[in-house]
Length: 460
Figure 1: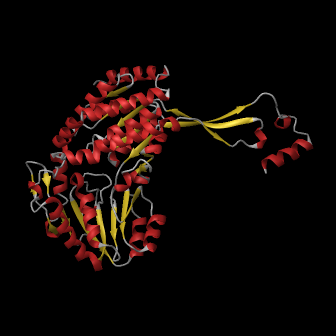
Figure 2 (figure 1 turned 60 degrees about the vertical axis):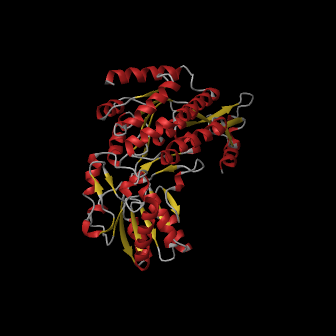
Figure 3 (figure 1 turned 180 degrees about the vertical axis):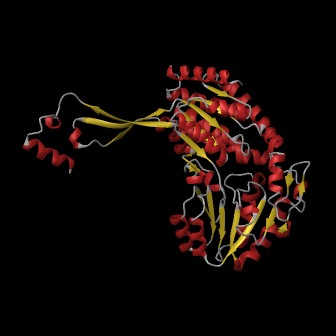
């Protein structure tokens, strides 16, 4: 799509939004029902597309992508009517007689830019939030997941007219053309590097934005942890989608006294979950493309690999890999891994680990395996990170009852459930002042001692 075509599309959405068509809650609910039904109808198409793009099994595709979208839409169907109501708040006595309230209103015309690693989930879930909040939307899926992008485009065209919700496919040229336009709100999920570019463009128009980024999410295991359970849950979360998950545990920081036991348990779990030859497992996925495959291969230090390390260049697959005796100077610790490589660092002083993490970039997630309540308290209260789990990984984002998002280098803003509705909503503060009484104390001349005393009474 050319820049002129994108501009024309946005202009049509502006006109549609200004018509007020998207404001009624009944309209929003009707559109959410359409989207829900279309996802169910195209479930097989979605699964096949995810298999083509990322090698995901149909089970994993539903569990981690379309199933989550359906859950989020169901949540919005139940709660949008309540979320969209104005909320009364207390009014100061000095403003008597009046009523104060917060009125939720849509931002208007929004842009949703989604990544390739969870191309269905991270496109359609924020879209459901945008629809529930009453916006129009232009959706830009990733060019790296073309099969899923094609299915998403098909679903959206079946459900919505382009002046309401539209899809723009393509690569960098289309991304640049979209970011040059003035939207009312931008929702971006992707890398920190691209997130900075998005923010530079939105700043030109003073456009608010939510950035869902990533980072090197640490996973700490102390000596009090259930090591075998930790290994089972970490192996699941680390190698899910071949490690191409923004909240996957990036690296393990393990207390030295239990490190060997953890490595042994992790190896056993990899074999149990993925088989003796993971690259022959039809349910084990692949790296998205050759570029990322070669990047990941460059992070593997053969001298430190204690398990895995096998690759298949033809299929862009890397087996679940464990690297031991890793330090912060190793290449694998120099960037977000975003692949099936698990580096293990060790420690002997938990407090020193916490202090060290305070000096690093704020990650999207942090995980702690422990039964030590003091350790839990220190990590949850003192360290800054997007979100996380105690004695598990990843599952904190699998609910519509809590917002999900980053902080600092890992992003800004959050969504899921009520937070998702709020992300695409502006709350207007309104005072409805009655006309049957007008207190004179705010008007000049200010020479009445009685009014001064009355004012001090009201404002103390």
